[in-house]
Length: 200
Image 1 (cartoon, one colour):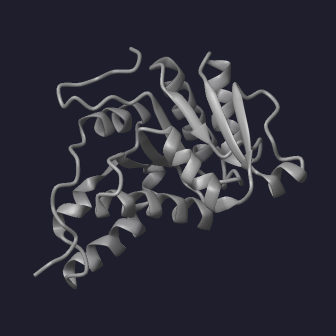
Image 2 (tube, rainbow, N blue to C red; image 1 turned 90 degrees about the vertical axis):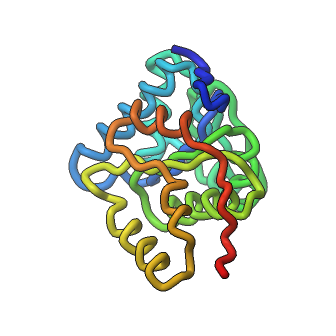
């Protein structure tokens, strides 16, 4: 399958992936990153990511490239200067800073996924989710929920709903799955956000 367009009419040709520049504990996160990279390549979806060879980011890129996929890396000048650029990418760009990097990754992509990661991963993902919530973009977001990694985040989201800081429908605007193909299928089926964020 390549560049699928489901009955919903949503086409996904490229996905921005946010994930750790560390590898985490054990092999579960490494295996998940590799599986996602392979799934993207198999389905003809370009991987857009932060351009480094470090941690899960490097595992993800290597898996996609080894499976014949296209990988577009966007790295900052500072990280490039530290020698962090992956040397096998299909395409790479060097941008001035993290703000420009995030904007460029989103511009290049039709959807966004977060693998497990740290503060940067969470911040990048939440910005993409917020832009969808506001209606500034229509680029569905998903979490690869490896071993329940993102369960605490969704508990916090539920707290926001309970205390009326977030409409309940907005919880459903993020796709959660443990399997890469199920996650991609969920993104393809995700309708645009239609419920306003402002509650009466």
